[in-house]
Image (tube, rainbow, N blue to C red; front, side, top):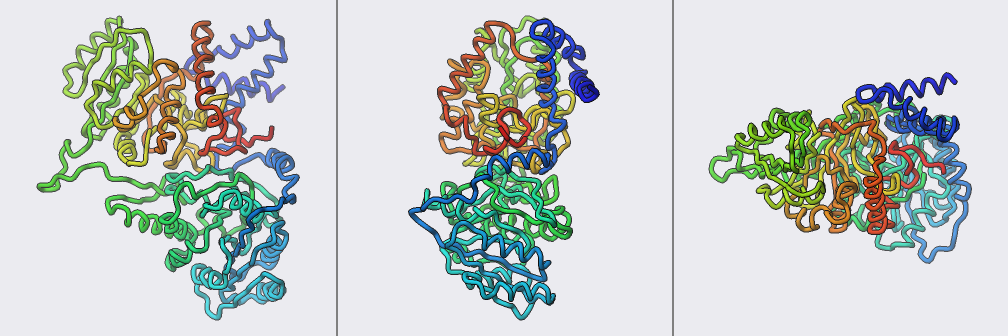
Amino acid sequence: MLKDLKKVFLIVWSDRRKEPLRFFRKSYARWRKKGWSEVVRKLNDEYDKLNLEVPIEAGRTDEAEYKMWIDKNESDILKTEKLNYEPYFSIITPVYNTEPKFLKNMFESVLAQTYGRWELCVADDASNKKETLDVLREYESIKNIKIVFRQMNGHICRASNSALEMATGDYLIFLDHDDMLAPNALYEMAKTIDENRKLKLIYSDEDKIDENNNRFQPHFKSGWNPDMFFSQNYICHLVCLRKDIVDRVGGFREGFEGSQDYDLLLRALDYVDDSEIAHIEKILYHWRAVKGSTAYHPDEKKYAHNSGLKALRDYFAKKDLRIVVEDGLLPTTYKVTYPIHRLSSKDYRLTTNDYPLVSLLIPTRDGYDILHKCIESIRQKTLYPNYEIIVIDNETTCPKTLDYFEKIKSYKNVTILEYHKPFNYSAINNFGVKHAKGEIIGLINNDIEIISDGWLTEMVQHALRPEIGAVGAKLYYNNDTIQHAGVVLGIGGVAGHSHKYFPKDVHGYFSRLKIIQNYSAVTGACLLVKKELYEEVGGLNETDLKVAFNDVDFCLKLLEKGYRNLWTPYAEAYHHESISRGAEDDPEKVKRFNQEVEYMKKKWGNILKYDNCYNSNLTKKYENFRISIQ
């Protein structure tokens, strides 16, 4: 009973700025119509939406929930089937003074593999602990295990290269000296390669293990997500890479110790297409989390972060010297900044015209308070020098709003367009685009309030990149919880907002609220895209999606054309959309919404069922990255 009262209090508190008595009013109506059990069911449902008992920080997953997931999903991991093609794997493991029991665990996890075509190449980097050397000699005589004892300590890169020299496999697997492979790790890799012989890089999900091999903190990763990879090495473990590529790039480079795998993968990307990368949504690697390891805490090896920064800078220096790589918002994360301006050919002093013109489209009808806040926040906060504001007036009658229109008409970069047709969000924006002069289009809801002065600069730099489609911002509700941080397909049947209702300052699921990354879609409430791309995909669907899901449909059309969509936490704004408005209960609106849902399901079908930027092991019921155990 006390727990239920706590839930009621928290739900009411979350709604305090909009409608404090909403929950009681609706609960009373629900009790009269369906009884107390329905009130309790709805109470739990709304409480779940608040994300107050879900992992709001990296990997903070309920242990009992994870155990349930393991029991449900790993009961048959020892089963194998005959493969048409059986690749030969070389497992690369550098060793230095490893704790004997952990070293034995590592060896035994390899020997327990259900797939037999492998060799374990171990390079001991001049260990001086007798216990470590004893374990190595114990396993040295076992078939398929090769061990070289280096005479001089050279750190992890030299040791790894010594192990590479012994490798004869088609593919390389990288295994740290105190970590463990799941028994089906190599089989799942082999099976994936058998299904697609063109693959060159494969990675899996992973978890962590403590000193007693207890498993925790599973990381269910995104599919190949280039901009996330440039923000942090989310791939990490388990990685399988074609040996000929590693040979071509020259193996591990000295000077990148701590992030040697990251550096290797970045250099390998020059020889790997996106279509040649695969992600296995299974836990195939157990990362040892003990004091002194980055698995235990990122600050344990700060030099690893610096090495990663160095590797990323080296990678982008070969692409464009104007690209800047800096520390990210969190340890072990990075921020890549891309060039925007066109340098003047005369004296290289930047002028407004050196920046692409951005046309910000703001549809509105009446709503003086929110519109005024929106436009004035753009004008006061935006540092980007070259933009125009196009207000699309959908038959405003409010005198105060009309007076405001007269005032802002005098601003040199503001235009008022009149749209005399019934409300149709898609059609209004398409109309605005036809009148836009900018190279880049910005779709901005009239209830957006800009709060970061660099927001437009941050978004424009990505919108200009030739491989990027739509760019989305980080949006908050009035009560400083997340409204939008990328769109996940399939949630609620069509799509939902990543991390919705999470507190403003939390890191999110494995830092995803604090890093630039790709999402399948972003919200049209604050979206940037090149005008030519907007027109290339036919803009927003004004026939079938007049109000809902037009932004998701638009983003999926961009994906279909081969562009990738992007979300950045460095562009922030409030979205003054009611956090407590509930479902639309007007019969006509309900009918329209249901029709739009059915249209999306019919058009995009299976694409909505699997989101490459999400993970099938995570919930499709809520927007909180909770493990799915259904």
